[in-house]
Every structure is written in structure tokens, then in C-alpha cells.
Image (cartoon, rainbow over all chains, first blue to last red; front, top):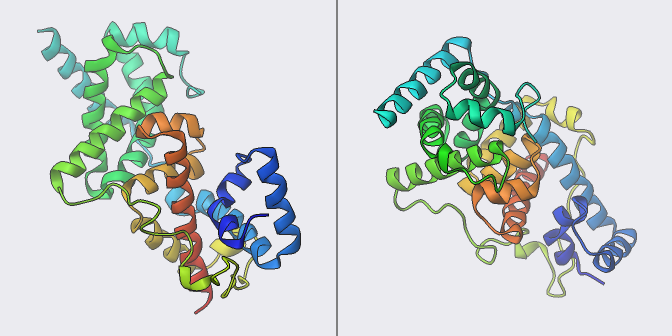
Length: 83
Length: 203
């Protein structure tokens, strides 16, 4: 049976379903019995979901003008390479 | 997986090799934002766009040698990551890209008893959904600040996995880390954000 420390160290593996079945079973049994670790894992899940929805998760926009600028740089680089 | 607005890698690569301007514009429109997001995670906001632009030139130069061991997207992001990492090393030679797990355990050892069970267990949070949690401007700031203090590779793993939804396999190729190290990076990043929220909730 894992300790509370083991639970905190492998909680991402548990949530991402990356534990072998026997470890997953021990992990699950611990969670059934330990309210503190249940809360810890629930809060990690909440944290992951909040990170995904936070303003920092937004992919930066690119304007048509910026695209054109980069394309020009790419053309210039290939010309230099070919030349 | 390729971007939904792009043709398949098999169609796109020959067009890029033929210097097709329309394909250049298509691929830049599809991936530049993601590249800046990744570069920002490693080198910070100020020079992220510059690093992404530098990476595009490197992509075109290396494309004839692309061996197709990964998708084009993963390969491009690996070039961004390498460009950003070398830029970071160049700008600040003392910066560590990551720290070992032993140096910084996931949980403060003082919170655990000698038998490795909780001495100071997690406290209740005021919200139990991400939207309710993020409704607080202070908490959004707290998450943002915690993200800013993560070591670059942890922040990159978190950005690619929990913000951009890439697979761990792709992330490990992009960051050039083993699968176990990739998982450690991701877990430590998530745990640090969780601890920052807990600290905020306890105030």
C-alpha cells in the first residue's frame, strides 16, 4: 500500500492513467481510505483543469501582416541558402 | 497530429521544399502562435517572438534533412525548443533549465510525518470547479505568478501538455527528455501551481 508521500509523488501518473494496474489498485485503495489524499488528488485535477482554462493557456494570435513578415524572412533565408 | 487547416505532411513537405510561398503562409498561420507559446515558456515573453522567427529560418534550412521520425509539427517544435534553450544558455549561462527531484520534493517534507503520512494535510479550497476558481482575479494572478517562477523545462512541459494538449510522447521528443523525465517535469510543474493555489487559499 503506498504512503501519502507516494500518493503525492505519483498523482499525475494516476490521473493520466500511466500507472501499471497493480500500482493503480494500491493507489485507489489508499484513496478510498485516506480523505487527505483524496482531497490532494482532487485538487491536483482541479489545478490541471484550471491551468488549461487560465489566460496563460491562450495561444498567441498572429496577424496577416506578421505572417507576411515571417514569410518574407523565410524566402530571404532560402534565397541566401540557394544562392 | 497535424493542424486541421493544413494539408498532410506528405503533401506539405514537398511544397515547402519547392519554396511555395502559399505553403509557407499556411504553415506559419497554423503553427507560429504555438511556437511563440512554447518559446515564451522557455525564454520568457520579451524574446519569444524573436526566437520563433529564428526557428522558422532554422526549419527551412534543416527541412531537406528531415527524416520523418516524428510529425512535421513535433519536429518544428523541437527546433523551437532547441533554439530557445541555446538562446537561454547564451543570455544567462547560470540559469538551470531544471532542478533534480531530490533537491525539491513535490511536498514540503515538514508537511509529512516520519512515516510518510500527512502531518499537515491539504486544506479545503473555496471552489471546486476550474471556472469558479478562476473567477477570482487574485487567484488568476497567483497562477500566473507561479507559472512565471517555474524552471523553463517544467513550464514548457506544462504548456505543451495542459495548455496545448500534446501527447507525452511528442513532448518528450520536443524537449529531448526521456519519458520518465518528461513525466517528472510535468508533475513537478503541476504540483508547484497546486501548492501556490493552496498557499493563496490559506491566506
